Image (cartoon, rainbow, N blue to C red; front, top):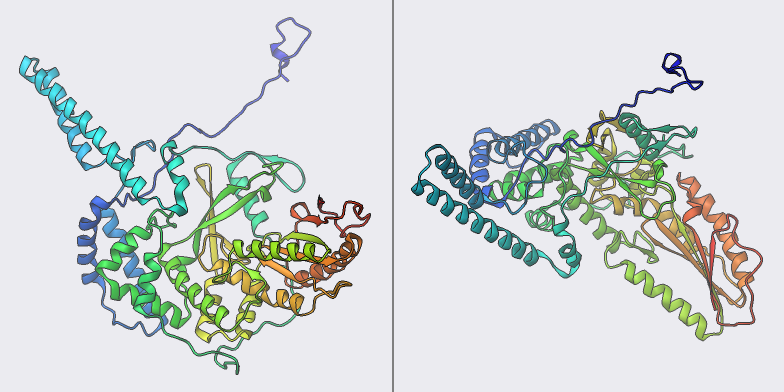
Length: 544
């Protein structure tokens, strides 16, 4: 309150200072621009560097040699990128169709324009008009070529990209977040720390001992199968060249260029990482971006935002290879129950929907009623206990090398939150599996597989002797019970829910009541809704 600004009035003035970041500053672009036109030049530089610096044998035998080899290989890729693909500090609005042909035409047009202004003559003016028309023609042709090339890369899986490619990049800023005590924060640094605390809470204490002695395999431990060159090339071929890179700025496109020049060197790195059970420390640093979840009541809550971790692509390539081995073993040795959809081969969301529809229609044909309870596991990826996960893989019989690699992959991880053009310092992460990693879905599904199997093998039976067994899809868990009455269905689902909550609490997980639904399927109009429902009363939908 400014008492000296009343100016003879009986009112006092209120003054305040309001500081805010410059939201109109240009967004810093990526360090590199890996355009296809620069591939030959990049590969030439990389070939010279790798032939000079790579002094290792075909087999990286010790951890120290492996760590040095990865460092040398990464530095060679980075140096080749700096020499050939460095992105100039240009505007973030630079068009993607702007190619070398347009750049040369623009330079000629600008030179002719300066000449026409400095030495005015009819000849120079005509020359400028000609180069200007040629520049406009090159722009038109580049735009058309880019559009046709973009459309040719669109498949039936990403058809809707045609509807959004021309919209450009929208720049938005995160809203103010609310602390646990209810006070708001708009400082970017504080928001980053608040998001980290919400996404990665301290690990929940889980009873039991989870020690693993990798030097003494169990009787059920399977032998390790060495990684082949074909596996690595197939894994790299299946990656997207437009995926966001990690902290180094090296994406999958530059990895494909490096694989063309030095396939044996890259293959030896991938093989050694898995065989030695080591995930390189460079690959454990993640840049986290915040993605708002859809249809949230308030985006001021930190849990209304999803963390997506941008990881190093060379490390993700190793993760893809290990994920394929885990998927193969899980299917061959039936390590996950058949009611667990998603996270394993040949079990998609469509298969889960067809199985549910079949059971409901079969109950209808038999004159029975069905009740369907859908649960959402809160923070599914972020609450995976590392020690218990490795112990679960160990008991499932995975090779010692795979278990050791997973332990290294989960240990000593750190992350930096990138929010509103601000990057927080790297902070350690001691819980969860990174969202954005190719191996995270299968690891999380294997983590909960023993609980799903216990529920599947010992279900609660209804009066018509039908089991209430679970059906899971990644972080969603569902139960379908069939009987003669909706009231009995609710009683069975209530007992099932109490049992499920207890079992998941033992592995450090819980459910989100706001995302749980209870649906009844009844074709008898005289029957009314039951008066009771499962304990935390999810929303109720009725079909008659």
